[in-house]
Length: 344
Image (cartoon, rainbow, N blue to C red):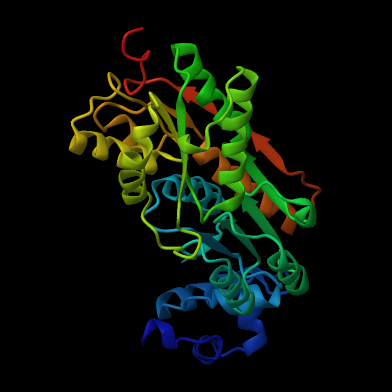
C-alpha cells in the first residue's frame, strides 16, 4: 500500500478494532492494554503509516514552524545568522520557512502576512525594515516576532529584538584609524538600510568630533539605493570610491564588508595599493573578509549568536516566558588592509 494513502481507518480495518482505538494506541494511551497497543503499532509500522504532522500540530494550536525573512540569499551576513537560527530550531524540532524581502518593507509585510495565513508559530526578521506603519500592521495580526539587528525606534518598543551594537562598532572602526594617524577618513554607506546606516554613520561622526575633527561632507558618500532595494553593495562600493578620492581621504570606513570589497576592486582598477595609499575598514566580518587581498580589517558581528539568541527568544515567547531585548558587543578584527598614512 502507498505510504501516503495509509490512514488510521486503514489500520483499524486491518487490526479489527475501532478508529478511536487505533488513535489512542498510536498516542501510547494508557486506556489501551499494552499488548493491544503493541499489536496496533506493529501493524501501523508494517503498513508504512506516517502521522500527519500538520494535522497533529493544528490540534495542539502549534505548527512547530517558524517564518524567517532575510534580505537576500546572496548576503553572506544573513547566511551565518540563518545557520545560528537553524541550530536552535533543529534541536527543538522546529521547521523554518525562509523568504527573501530584498530590503523592501512592503514586500516583507506581505511575506509575514502570508506566513500568518500559513499558521506559523512566529516570525524572525533579519532585514532591518520593520518600522513606522509596519509595526502597527504587525500588532494587528498579533504575530510573535523577533527582529535581528533592528534596534527598535520608539514606536517599535513592543517588539523584541537581538542586535549587535552598530554605533559602538563604528566607533571602534574609526578609533582604530585615528590611532594609526589618519585624520581624513571617509565613510561609504547605503541608502536602503536606513536605521543601521544611521547608527554606523553617527558612530563615525561622533568619533571624529571627539578627536577634534570636523566631518567634511565631501568625505561621505551614501549609495543612492533608497528606491533600488536589490542594489549590489559590492558594485556600489566600487562606484563610490572614485568620487571620494579627490577629497584627499587617506582611509575609508565602509558600511559593510561588501562595500569594502568593492573599494578594494576600485583600488586595483585605479592602481592604488591598500593599505599603502588607502586604508580600508569593513563591517560584519563575513567569511570573505579574511580571504580577499589584502585581508580586510573589519568589525566582527557575532552572527551565529545573533541567530541562535533570536531563535531561543522566539521559543521563549511562544512558551509564555518573559524575554528582554538584547544588544551584543562587536569586536574590531585588525588585518592587513589598514596601516598608518603614507609618509608617517
